[in-house]
Picture 1: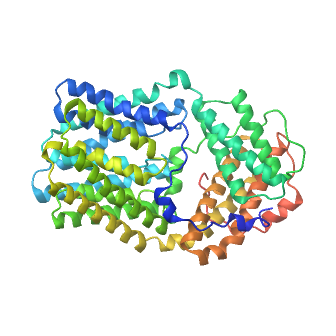
Picture 2 (picture 1 turned 30 degrees about the vertical axis):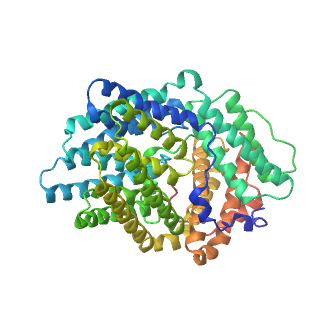
Picture 3 (picture 1 turned 180 degrees about the vertical axis):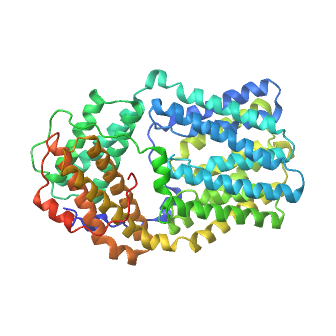
Length: 550
């Protein structure tokens, strides 16, 4: 099946120019945008009325909490956002400590070291734990922003208190819709999975199976089961709908022309991988998360040193600009275009800030302006990050630079800081990661082969619904998805090595999904593996150590 459709699985050339301005679909995004806006405006208004002056808008740092987990089930969103809130307040505290260090040289060293460490930890943790947009970027941004405002005279206690108030507001506002829309996140996730399965099954029935459609459906199903596990849903109409969709997916893989599969629930898929396991599985040399983190750490440190050497006045801005470009993705060409996109966005954002600063908004008018900017940011951040950067830049500069104090020198320095961070980021991007690009696909193919053999071994002695089999099935699905992502990256970054590994990649992908389909269709019965599957498992490529979950 996959062999015939192999060309469909090869990544197609991307139109990177279109990527610069394309807006990805994001239905219903206005809800998250409204929540993020209220999370900023409500506490900022209260503190402004309480005579906090310009310090009132520092609640924006904590309000960034509302930009996370916007599509997660509320049952898990509550503790997740609490963790994010603590991390953001901690970032404000640590950044404030660095900015409070006396002496120009000493404070510079403190800022570079602090922001480098925070950026590395934030980016690795956010990517390994699949935080989703906006990833670890805002933790680095808050650290730099707090360092700057304390350095220019704002008391550390005020900075931390404002961040904490904003974070608390963000948590409350983000959780309020749970009172009337508790099931909305998981319902949307299941609907997405059902649609993806139908698209794949239709192509399979037409004898035009698509590797891309299969992978899309598998990822959507995996995410939907994670959403139901997050919500604690183990039965009911929503569960049944997803279960039936997964049976249809398995049937479309095994025999798309067979009658639709139905039956009672025989297996409750496990939820998302545990956090400790995710972190451990990402800590190896051929991990994209490690490559991204190394690039960020190197680029942030170099950007800070260079900005200080040139005396721009805001080394933190150069360092955060480097994080903005590098914190997601390992694709060098794509990230280079992304760098151009985000440099242009930042420069335009500096111009927007200059225009707004000339109007000298103060008090509640400034809060209103920031609210509008926050609304636009949240509408755009998952649709086109580069365009969102225009408004992120204006918002952050309005927070950190009181409008009445702005002159042409500040504007030109922020543009220079941006160019420094971008130039360093792109240089580091192209000088690192060659070993990863060449070796990641064979490595991931080996891990997938390990997972296939492990599941087959479990199935020799027990049915596919036991706890051990459930863990092995989840492991194999995770490895299949990781291998698919690695194939995309490898084919664009190291096409010669990727083409050499492609037959083994296609072999493990097809066999892995066939084995998972066998498990779904076998139900609770201990069914011997067909001889065809046994023979294909024997012909697998060598394994690569342990799997992500084992």
